[in-house]
Length: 229
Image 1 (cartoon, helix red, strand yellow):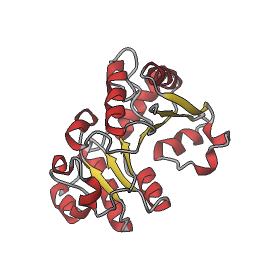
Image 2 (cartoon, helix red, strand yellow):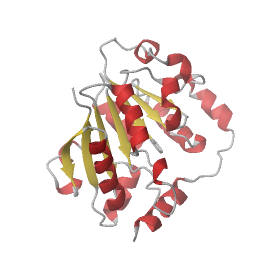
Image 3 (cartoon, rainbow, N blue to C red):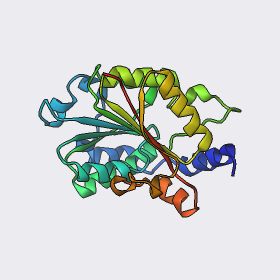
């Protein structure tokens, strides 16, 4: 399938009907998300009850929360924040974390374009971008979460030595993203076009989309881009 077809299929899969009783269900999991996250800017560790030297990891576009939940359990000393724009999808992720009682995982029902409103400069140690919408050439590549304007924003919120971990099934998006990372002065490492058959698969946590694509025989691409010190 070409990138446009796969991008359309992913958008259709991610698009869900609004959940019934969404406000009530969100309220029942109020300890997992923040109604006014802009008030946390510069003090996420403090607000969430973590020490000042705790590392903060942000996943942008967390979907139903499988990756964030498994990563948080795997690394209990780190603070994980998962962002999802779709309220209905975000609700499912929040409820999953609520049921599992994962103490170091919190959620943002927000748009990635507004990250500056929620995080202070240098507040984030690592950003995960997993299977972001490819936004094919017929649409708007500038909306890609790996477009240079987004990357410059990430660099500001992370600081020197911090990394972006990017995974995708889409060849065009992968090539585009690697070039954007380089153009923005990031150092490329852990580059692979077949993650599940690479040395980095042992520590890899699969997302819902990742497992689906793997089952279809589609190779998963991954790269780590680090802000230079």
